[in-house]
Length: 345
Ligand SMILES: [Zn+2]
Image (tube, rainbow, N blue to C red):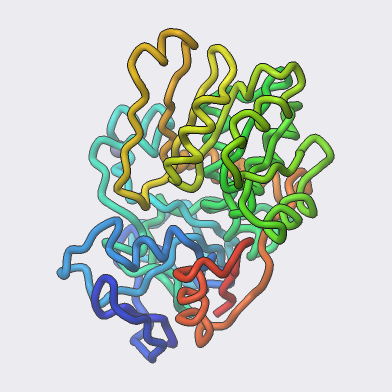
C-alpha cells in the first residue's frame, strides 16, 4: 500500500510503498477513507509529542475515519464493513479514570496513535479495537476525521467550563479548526462568542462558518483587551476565554479582559511557554486558569453525532491525496493554512 512515512522526527515526509499491516490480536485493520492533516500532527512530526528515535520510521496521522477491513483474534466489538472513527490516545481501559469515562486522564497512558505506533497517513491502518468508535450514518468520512480531534477537543473545553447561555466566550485563534468548532458549539449552547484572530481573511473565514451569535473581533493592536471587554453584553468582559494559539501577549490581554469569576482555558501543547499572572490577580477576580486535555472517547462519539445530525458544520477547506500531504505540512509549518485539510488516501 502507499503511505506517508517519516524517517526521523523533524525530518521530511516521503510518500512510498510499504507492506499492508496485519492486525495483531485485539486490533482492527481499517481501510482509511479520511484523515485530518493538521497542526497537531505537524507538532508530532516535529517531535513535539515524542522524539524517541526508536519510534521511527513512522506513518503519522491520528484524526481519521474509515471502514473495518479485517479483525485480529479476540476482537468482539467490530466486524468488517463497520464505519469507524478513531480515538487519539492509547489508553489502558482498566484504570479508575478510564473506567469512569475520563479516558483522556488514563494513568497508564500509552502515548498517541501515530506516534508510538503507525497512524493513518496510509491506505490502511491497524489500531487497537478500543481506539475505534462508531461513525454514525449521516456523517461523511471527512466529518468523522473532523470529529476525532477538531470537534471533540473543543467539545471537551465546553464541558470543562460548563459553557451555557449566560456565558460570553472569547476564542483566541478562532479561525483554526478548534476555534471555528468551539465558536459553533458555544453559540449552540446559547453563549455569546467573540471570535478573535489576526487577519481579515481569517476573520472572514470564522464569520462564514459560524452563526449570528458569533462576533469576529480583530486580535491585533494594543487595545485588544479593552475592545474585547467592550464587546461583551454588559461591558464586564468574557466569562470564558479560550487560548488555542499560545501567543503570550494575546493571552495576557485575554486574562486582563476576563469578567469576575472568569476562566482562562489553555489547550496548546505545541509551545514551551509559560504564563504566570500575579497570585493576587487570581484572588481579586476569583479567576481560574483551566487546562483542557484532548477529549474523552464519549466526546469523540458525541462530536460525530453532532456532525451527522447537522448541528455543527465541519470546518474543512480542501481534500488532498497522499502525494500532497508533504506539501500540505509545509504550508501548515509556514502558517499559510486555515480551516482543515482532509487526506483521502
Ligand atoms: Zn487507563
